Length: 460
Ligand SMILES: *[C@@H]1O[C@H](CO)[C@@H](O)[C@H](O)[C@H]1NC(C)=O
Ligand SMILES: *[C@@H]1O[C@H](CO)[C@@H](O)[C@H](O)[C@H]1NC(C)=O
Image 1 (spheres, helix red, strand yellow):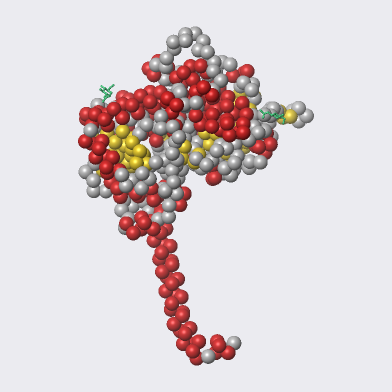
Image 2: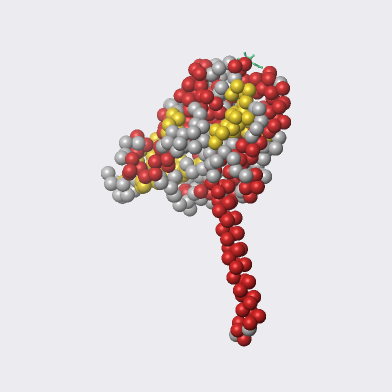
């Protein structure tokens, strides 16, 4: 107490207070600047700020490296139980004829799409080594917004629970259910399927909804998230963004094919349009690497003012299209792959179902080698054209067709079933009540009822 009264302390305190205010002010300014750096969508922010932006969820230095650079040849085809091609053993996939055919047989799927089922085989092995899947696994998973619990009984799809926070979730959940339904009804043998039950999430990341050790179905995973099962994203059915309707993937592809210009007429620049604030560190690195370059055409989009908005088709008028991950994967990749252009991508961190086959020009996550890569491509236009041709042949005309999508879904049902070791009761006999509502009925519900849906409590 004596100390506090001493004149020496008083004089020190008179220095201390302003110092505390100053430190407080500096801290607040610092926080404000970092907040601005992370959330700003301006074209340019001061370089010191881009240094300060935390890598956050994009953890910029790590990325997924695929074991097989070219899984078309080294895929684990032999690990899939084979079925003989029925009618003609010499059947080969013809994009023009078969690309829209969602009813290819299992044998045709395997013959047409080597490497497509890689991640399913991985998840299959993971769960086999971990004692298989039981219904108890699902009981441990809380259904959060953007998730649904569904089951397939005698080849028909039932919704047990579905939870959405608003329109975006609801539409994505419906798109997933519809894609599953389409893959089911195009298979005449579906009634003989083993019953299965699963939970899916339409959120960007596994960790948005649950821990990484759960067997949920998701659109993307990071390399360490081994328990999850990858499903094709909602955009194959249709991307009906509240702000921006994009439509079914194959319709976008049709538009692109109709409006595509010859390679020689394409603009010799690298195009990118997007919101930097979705992944500031990563996206700003691209903007900085391309700023002032003669080949750069990188602009930020402001959706509220609709500045710099560019249609998907218009991207195809460029020889080079950049792709950057967002919060996790970016659903835009498949549209960029639909152009006969060279897709330039940084080393990816998130894996989607078709990523094992990726065929693009890969640059570092900080885009430090972007300029050198672009220069090499511009110096050798026929190599660039070959890469673009190859990309279209591999993706637009094969692995991203409706045929491939349906094959993938059915292989997902098959591989998941192969480790699923429980029966799936579809109703409780005592209560005369179904555990799930058939997909056909669910889609006819009032949209508000879909937001928080539980079949066992739904009044019928
Ligand atoms: C399924 O469960 C039973 C009993 O729990 C067990 O004996 C059997 O090995 C399991 N099968 C698989 C494929 O995990
Ligand atoms: C790319 O494909 C087009 C159309 O099929 C063809 O005319 C062209 O020769 C191909 N270019 C290269 C470099 O392979």
